[in-house]
Image 1 (cartoon, rainbow, N blue to C red):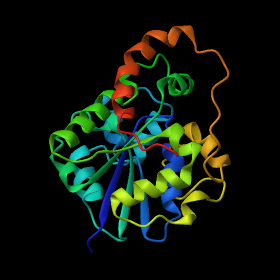
Image 2 (spheres, helix red, strand yellow; image 1 turned 90 degrees about the vertical axis):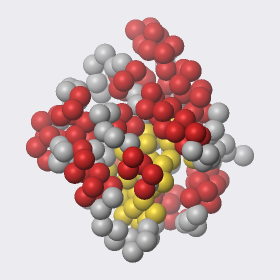
Image 3 (cartoon, one colour; image 1 turned 135 degrees about the vertical axis):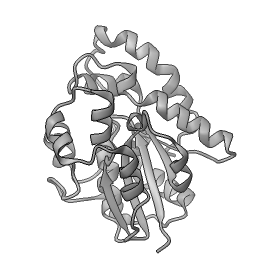
Image 4 (cartoon, rainbow, N blue to C red; image 1 turned 180 degrees about the vertical axis):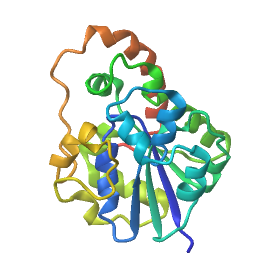
Length: 241
């Protein structure tokens, strides 16, 4: 079966799980939750919540994951892979030519405090932003028009942003993408209990609300590192009307 192998290369805390749940509602789509996470934890040594559980549950051979999952059997017209961009670290990128890549980003002023609530002393490497910009430049250098989604824009008007994203992907938008049942999903990774509390309470994209708490002083140096990378991605983002 010919299919669209759609890989969303996100960073953490970017509404990526909500986007996965959105695509899960499509009758033509099968979703996969961070298939490279086990590889990334083994390769990087990152100390994430539930690290040992993830390593025990997942294939840690990145090349095999690429071959057997990302490029593996196609059971539906659309395969949706929720991936973290930094999970690419240490892999050869040639396989990306067989995927349709979408970049999902979020203002680091809103993302970093949430990330710091899950991992200790986050660094720029934990955000996925360097790899996202590399992916962006790779698309541009090949003469392609990159598809970039920005979390705030999705939350401001999910129907219009997703309609445009689907148009660029060559698939029809489905109204079912705007709502889903609360609670865990069978496709959730074993790390869901550490990261997905908000997603499991959700039944759709929550309306955008600006952060009201002061930005943590200890994260300001990281914010300054992250801002220009985010700005480069945001130049290409699909905007809500």
